[in-house]
Length: 292
Image 1 (cartoon, rainbow, N blue to C red):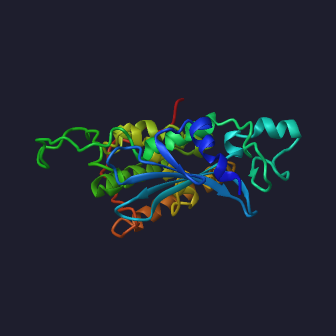
Image 2: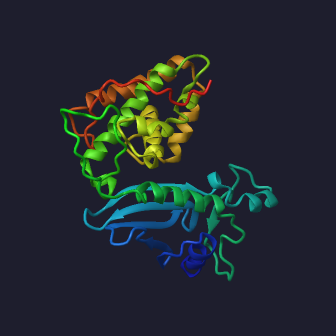
Image 3: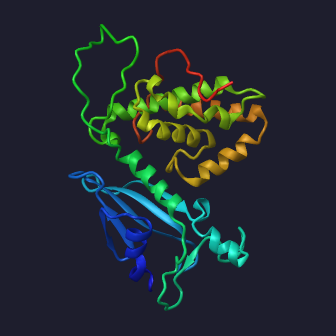
């Protein structure tokens, strides 16, 4: 295969990923110094040998072992080969559309002419979510349970958020709260995507979650609604199913949201694999997403 011969140029030159190491056709990085977390990026294969339709991102934990999260960035969704395919008259569904192939010996890389601006931005967003710069120990406070603050204070996780049980519990509670608000917002003039859009901007009101994690809460809520919560909330299948659901009658949209709420309620005292999901205390509902 010729792919490994060109991979370093792709990652370091076109994607401008210069803080890691390329081994073969895979990029490895430790975005946060002295962290047990590793970012791994390689090419996502199709069902055909030697054909790839995107980049596969994985977050690895050297102490816990295994893959904490994975997501695939499809070339088609990021216009990586739009200019090439337009010039060749290829459209979605055509053979060779938005893929690269490593089938023959050649001097030029298979991604010649790729536009990687959107891919690079998506990688930065994904990395920032899993390794936010605000991930630091929470400051000590003199507040006690007998004298709670009138509004929850925004608190960063204690170290890496995924291994902070208290912060994960707050994430689950905030996701529940978003679902609860969306269920009350839906009507004939205010549909699902419109209600969900903007939820990330209310994370400070949702049990004190830092703004940097708003996109995760919004994505988790969307994944719960469409029933894809067992994988990465950033799986493109979540967006696809959400668009399809948004086109259905409003009654079906509300039913899907309330079904997600029901799953959260039934799992509140059990193990969801990511921490329990306690029902949050009653607080005034933020007007998530509604701008009119």
